[in-house]
Length: 281
Image 1 (cartoon, rainbow, N blue to C red):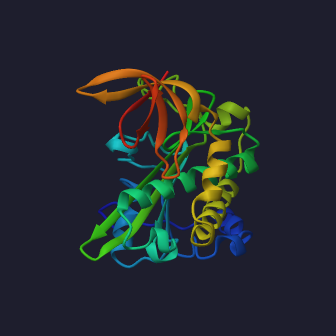
Image 2 (cartoon, rainbow, N blue to C red):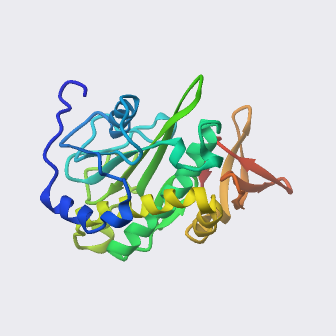
């Protein structure tokens, strides 16, 4: 661990929530590190993975000092406001289509889609809140962000080594920075009541385990079907897409393809958006 990153005792109520779901968790969270604060749970999980941590190893933190989201953006992670979790995924456990020979980008995309479905289902089950998925990696209530997901792949000359999957769920209202005010929300803000965060965390890990363990058998088909059901904005929404040379153009979302790319209609034809910037209007 980095200086100052000392594991803490796992809360008894989290242990109880995990034990109640042990059959569904498989090996997830059998290896568990819990922290009061870290720089980034993804960074800690990556270091543990490099040191041999098994598939399903989990890192949980009460706060992050350098949490990050997609494209290196910061993730606001103050103490007591959210759940910050990262899980190590090994290619051998993901199935032939996601093994060591697959590209890191394609596996990270598949894992992101799978996590979106799993975490959304967990939030819906535990809180009753009807969260939706917004491509590529956000869970939202209305137009406000509730949860972010980040999958980062690590590869070597021999192929894909591991994927670290991180997610952060806003639990309580926080003093959001000005650039987030009005664009972020939390479970307690939406429900006007608290939710059992340890039960939510355990349920999210259990659903993630079930979804990931299903990939070798079912591939992405079932994940994609449910993802589309949970993401109404993926079809028929107005967006701006970066069309090249710094030029933004209006487009309309038209679903996602079987690789997880966003499809948009622009200038009378269908275009794939993979990693390019999208502005939701």
